[in-house]
Image 1 (spheres, helix red, strand yellow):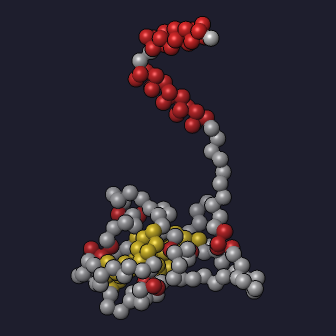
Image 2: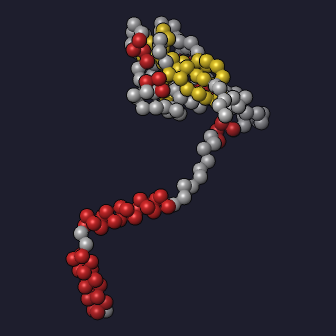
Image 3: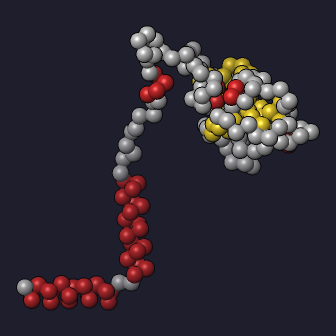
Length: 178
């Protein structure tokens, strides 16, 4: 077995003399990147199993709950749901006012299969509600595209810039481009 150890030692020393650590790491990194690109992207199921759950005993689908983050109109919402804070999906709670500026999202209604334009308006004038925080970033863009970014204090144009909660007002049907 001594000959095997000597053979391995000679081979290891020869490799150590002819290569550098940086070169080896660079080559290893290149192989990892090429290998990752060469691997196929495996499909995965994005279907929310809970959305298709049946009600116990009745066999019917659950009614949409506007106080849950999974409600279809909240697909691009980032904030506390006004429906949990004394308001509704489209109106602010008493003592607050709707923001003068908003961000727009397009959400698909699973009941009719149509896409709707949704205006997300913050309600301003009170401390943050603190209940039912939802943060979905579907279609969100970097902060330099203000109208497409949902992580901004949209109360900045109001007299009070204190954020309380967020509404989701349906503006209309989204146009289908072919």
